[in-house]
Image 1 (cartoon, chains in turn yellow, orange):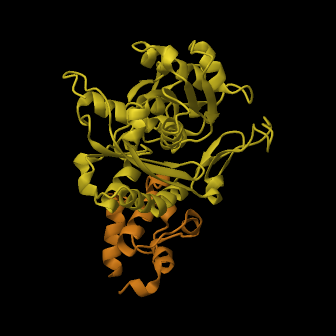
Image 2 (image 1 turned 30 degrees about the vertical axis):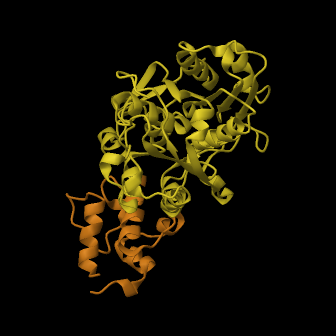
Length: 337
Length: 78
């Protein structure tokens, strides 16, 4: 498994937040939410552009003609059609004998991408998969929505997977609860409801900005959803993989926000030194938080080749998924596999 | 749990140091009360009583007295 990621150049810091919203406590954002900076796309930059940059970074040291399947996870495609992964195949100059598809998930996206990849690889349908997660929630948020603009950052991650990775990927625990659909949504702009520039913004009972044209998130409801489902998911995935918390070398949950993650950690009694909780300089990049965290841990030596790790994604949908795997990569300095 | 004790834990969870609050203090009047405070309340109630309160239920809560009633008065002693 090899991972590279790309965050767009423009940085939106807590200092920027405070100058735009003088009554918004940006210091509290760093302290509670754990974010100091997010990267934001420029006006003409899309998730596909980020996907391209992350993929180019990854494929620079590879024979890209070996890629025979491309999977792109995004909720911000360039067009309704054609499929953005098809555009990406062309821009990356991958061979034409290559499958390509988009799938629409957010925070659970990387886990589902791994699940799809494991299936394709073990069935012999693909031999080298390029799995890309790319998101630009900044394009969905209203200028005035200081709360969500504090949290979300744009970014993309590209991961290369082969049959060896699939063999070392354990069992998955996946779940869905569509009854939570309203709590994290961009209502207008797709097929159900037209984007209407006349629609006014409102605030819900918690002061969250609410406009059908833009991203709406009910933080407390999402928090409830995670408390309800994440610890149970972790227990089940450990059980399915016949291991306990002690057997897992490192946990990488979707990096939603520091407060929520810390609460979940304590609830699940996972030691802090085994638990990733760091989005200080990237913000919540949705489907890329897990591969970004994984890459950073691989580079820093926090995770070593062969370590048993647990990855867990959860959020918009509601959708969730977790997996235990024996991480298969080449460590930087020693070249140890 | 004693009501007094709960109020103390409430203050701790929401990091209220400046003002004195009692069970009748309107929550919205608390300095800096925002959606993170709502999350802190959800976490507190889950931790202490293993009870899950929805955002909608909490929107109807105007003070700690209401909150204790929502959690269930049987959980508290004066």
